[in-house]
Image (cartoon, rainbow, N blue to C red):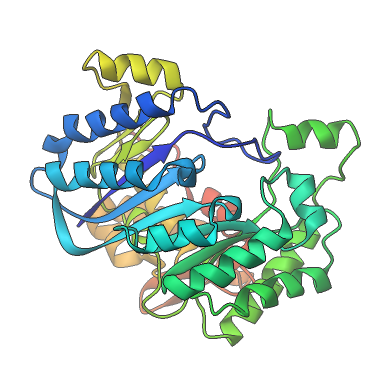
Length: 378
């Protein structure tokens, strides 16, 4: 099974923390939709033997598209690919786009999963992050969306300067009050060249503190697990049967095609990425050329990716798979490198699977980087 990701590179305004590719000008939106449809068709041979299980609209802000544009792009996927009977079709959406009328329209479309960018229910947080919606819109959209959609995920950000533990608990409780079956939650990260970085450097916003983020993470894990959520990936929590099929496919190494500017693709051996420039993307597609660069992954690349994704998920890192797929040298290296983390109770081995302990979960990315194999000749 495989997936198709469609990147919608437009936003109404730029969030201060965001470093994804997007434009706040909608002038080229019509041309972009036609170009996305054309790329979908141009790349159909890549999945000639694959069944598409998931279609995911990401961004940017995909909810700036009209329902007709969304339906058009989905129909182009069906026209050019073999799709399973009941695919997961996700639309990322912002609360300010989800009026009652819009939610009702979407419920009658092929979209069957909403991923809503709430981030916080506090007005001061939303203003600090320069979100396009306000707290009232966040509450209203969830009230309406849960009437028409069963499969909903929402995003929350923790570690925000000024967000106390009690306020963070209230954010989680508010999310849970809507009966949402999936929550994705991330620490506020300060990326280079973002507005947030500049605001911190000029003293207008405090620097996020790792200790605060760590406390918020532990509160999040404990609260959601008590409420029946499975912590199936470092930043993702789902009720049973509500894991994101799209994201799980990434973590499990399945194939996917990324459509649109800056979108990434993976076929099991090679990674590809489209040019992160709307004008260059449009020009290339209009000239019947794919604006994509590719690299063939070395055995070390594939090992490192498996370590990273495996440790972040409940599926862990199979030591048997390491030996079978990568060889005894990699297994010996992993065994030696992981010993200090086993001794410090940050990792454990169960049924020949290497996983982080509850104490090690928040440190997963750092632990994984220490287990990467950087020196092997491929």
